[in-house]
Amino acid sequence: MLRGLVILIMLLDHVRERFFLHMQVNDPMDIATTEPALFFSRFAAHFCAPIFVFLTGLSAWLYAHPANGTPRSASAFLVKRGLFLIALEFTLITFSWMGSYHTVWLQVIWVIGLSMLALAALLHLPRRAQLLLGLALVAGHNALTPITFLPGEWGYSLWTILHDRNILMQTDTLTIKVSYPALPWIGVILLGYFAGPWYAATQDPIKRQQMLMRIGTLMLLLLLVLRGFNIYGETLAWQAGDTLLDSVMSFLNFTKYPPSLHFLLVTLGSMCFMLCWLERGMNNSGRPLLAASGRVLLVFGSVPMFFYILHLYVLLILYSVALWLFGANQGALFGVDHIIIIWLISILLAVVLYWPTRWFSRYKHTTKKPWLRYL
Image (cartoon, rainbow, N blue to C red; front, side):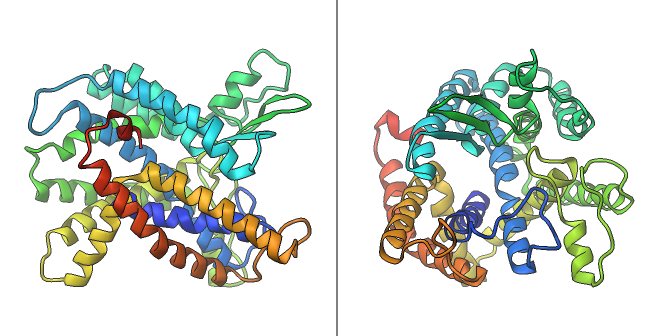
């Protein structure tokens, strides 16, 4: 259900990148030039990648510890799927964004695949070591920001993959750019794997929910202290603005590439509350509307890769048709005039794409074809 929720948020952000790209947002965002509706639309999308990566680690633990079977190694599972995701990023997903292969942007699918490969090598560590290493990567990578390498220096390529958002390779015909540096995301997937036992079949749901609430509260309190006093964990200090809204936007203006400690505290801390609330709502049969919403989220969350590829190609086709029909109206781009239209397009697409997603979800879970497991 949580994966389904962030998929719908992701849909909103990708519609924005197709039809509102003329209103660029920086990282972190420029408060002076970003209207509140656009700011909070982009801020909502911050929750997608951390939750996807964390739940990937948690799912790997569940794969290794099936409720009705003997424990099994997740290493081969993670290596095969990690390599598959990286291949997808270079092929189907690159084309869905650009309509060509002149520029390859290594984005969230790439970093999930890379994180899965790293987890395959690290999951045999003792649990305490997994926790400490995950925390060190999440909390400590901001301290590495002063380290930089220039193109051509010996550490440039490796540091581009791990920490800095730079061009990895450039020729006359091809540019490869790393949008999602991997180091902090490896920490997030490790923490997700560490959290796997919280969802063991023997775990008491009440105790799990209490633990999630405590951890979420601790993370958000830590954020308030670190961010409130601009101590550590973010590249851009927040400042009081002319209005309360300006101050809130400045406070929440976190760096995503790579994700700062503050970025991960607010997203993963909130995730703990969402996991708790969704589980409680799922078990509350007295609220039919909530139950129906949960079933919709389950559909989207049950086949995330299928929906990811489907919606990107639908957006590519829609944008190409709009550009052909109406021409470029925002410089070289076609775009709509207001962020509200982006929300309306997103809602319409969510309704339309629900039906093929539900069909594929049912087909995937009733067929024995092994290749479908990768989608």
